Image 1 (cartoon, rainbow, N blue to C red):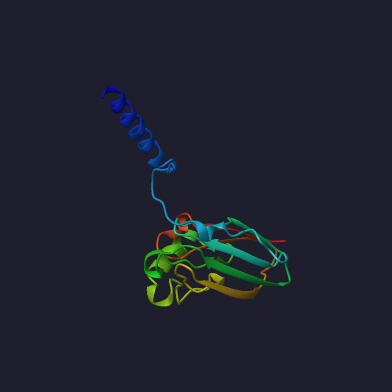
Image 2 (image 1 turned 90 degrees about the horizontal axis):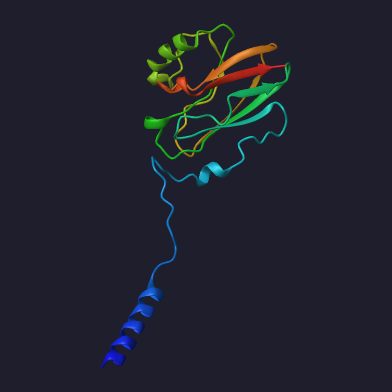
Length: 170
């Protein structure tokens, strides 16, 4: 009986080991979401004045600096690569004239919900995209302003603090 018990226990141990899952799941701390959409190359540019910029659910643009050539049309495409709704995490791209107070403009913009967060009575905007929700995109074409450095931002309330950059016309 002792030999039978040893054989039975050995068989049970082999069966237990062979049925176990060997795949380990890597667990990361913090907020996680599907980032498959972010695997696209966000630095792709067909020419210097054809620009692709993305915004995501973490309130970040793919770049904080854009360089274009003066005296040529600029074609800019904004892609919202996140998944959240426009009411929660809407993004746009707004190019401001030189000397515009960024914080002052953002304050006025936050009160302009009816106009996609673009103040109706302002002369500070050179060009802007429409407000986008997750998975949407918009392409605009405008003439590059005079050589110099300009600011761009997302005018959705509170986003400008992280979603801003410089637009350099050479």
